[in-house]
Image 1: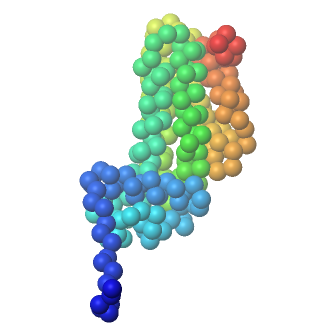
Image 2: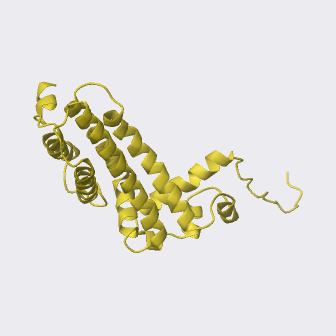
Image 3: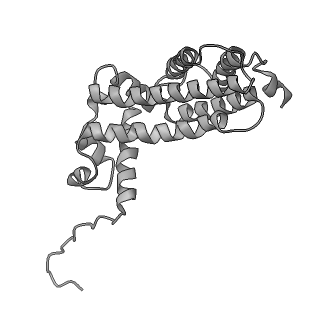
Length: 216
């Protein structure tokens, strides 16, 4: 039985989130967009449409899209640092630790290569992105140089120019990973690992880069 009274639809209530969860949702939405399009096409409206948050919520956590991209760089950088620590802070033979670290870095690029490609491209045209992305690359260069010096002091690497060698290795690796596992992958991850491991281990340790794989 009906009363004839018009039905009313209550507005859907937005699910409450902690600030950390809300911020992560926005960052994840930005990363998803950067997998599909260049940074120049990234807008606040597009990002927030991919979340369940209101558009004004964006400005609770970020000043603008540049601030958001800095957080994306920070997020991906944390993953890359975690994997690189397998060499910097690991134990065991140096050439095996290098390969272990490279396997981890390649795994990050398998998941986020398109996003990192978009950031690398944006760094060539946007000063804010250039500063953040450049700082990430420079950070890896500096850490690699320090670790090479420590390995030389420990007698594990023959004397060489640690800073210039680190710069050459990191810049080569960054370009190669973007080209091979970026927006349009051109090589299998296993091949990328083998190639980078050969270059790093033969340059630093003179060890057969594929030995660990062949023995496994």
